[in-house]
Length: 78
Image (tube, rainbow, N blue to C red; front, side, top):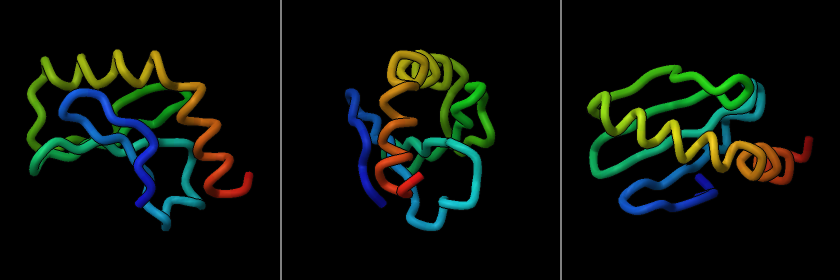
């Protein structure tokens, strides 16, 4: 599970088994977890985050979208 980015309490990462799925990023804080598709950006699922936090996380993803996709390509060799 490579960590791609950290922002405040949030850790953004991939799972090694994610290779065959479209571009996406997982984010966690404490026992909360969410998954966002990256192109286009949209929430796939969430466990425990408030709507406010999801909006904040989405803003981070919007700012980091290109670097997340580059990290995906580097990690998975695309």
